[in-house]
Structure formats: C-alpha cells, structure tokens
Figure 1 (cartoon, helix red, strand yellow):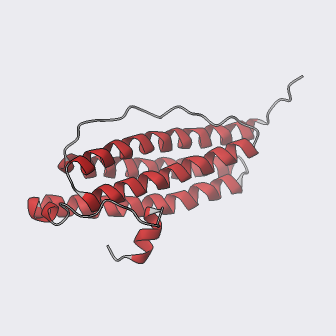
Figure 2: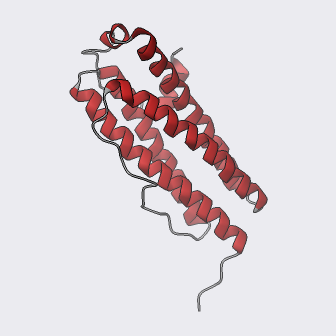
Figure 3: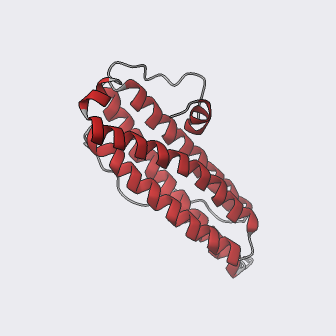
Length: 179
C-alpha cells in the first residue's frame, strides 16, 4: 500500500518541478544560442552563453535532488518550446525576458515553499535566484551595448576564443571579472 504524501510536501514538489522544467527549457534555449553564436564566430559571447547553460544544468540538478529527497519524481519535461534561428541582436533581449520571468517565478515559488513550511526548498530557490540575477545583469548589459553600439560592439567579439577553459560556471567567471 502506497503512503499518502503530505499535501504541503506535494505543493513544494510541484513548485520544484515547475522550476526544474523552466531550467530544462533554458538549457536547451541557451545551447541553441551557443551554437548560433559559434557559427557566427562570436567566440566569447558564445562561451558565456554556454557557461550560463551549464549553470542552468546545475540548477536543474539541484532541483531534482531536492525533489528526490522529498520523495517526488523529478520532471524531464521542458516548460516550453525552444526558439531557433535567432539573430545575435535578438538573442540577448530574448534572454532578458526569460531570466526576468525566471526570477519573478522563483520568488513566487519560494513563497509557496515558505507557506508550506519548507525553508530548505525556499532557501534553494533564493540561492538560485542570486545566480539568475547575475545572468540577467549580463544579458541586460550585453543587450544594452548591442542596442547602443551595434556592430562596433559586436566586432569586439568576432574571432574571440569560444573555449571556456577550466571555469565551468558563468557565475564564477563573473566573480573574477568586472563586466
């Protein structure tokens, strides 16, 4: 006989799975953009978008581990479709919208966790929100430079290295740089 799950735990698992599905969508979206930027030879832009995708993979894993700890099954479904064929000038404003929506949603989901009495899951959301804020700041700055300087700004990135080196986290890169 199956044990019935506490309704508050179910609410938390549902919140965590919603977040996980958003992370899975972001992973796919950012990897598609990484390949677009690579093909256009915008090496450093390509590398940073790839590192952000790796950050999202880590977030998805952290959500999955928490879901598993609570006795749930981590979703493998993406929250939505992936947009393909974006131009370099479309990528960063698009990503601003994705990250801003993520921060807003995660704050709402953290509140659900608090109300359900799960401060550990709420803390997980807050930890990830702080990293999403770093991604959002990067996307805003890059989109602003592209909007203001256009091809002059983009020329700075043509033929730059797309290799990420030993650092496997965009957040860690930004901790070392003043972008």
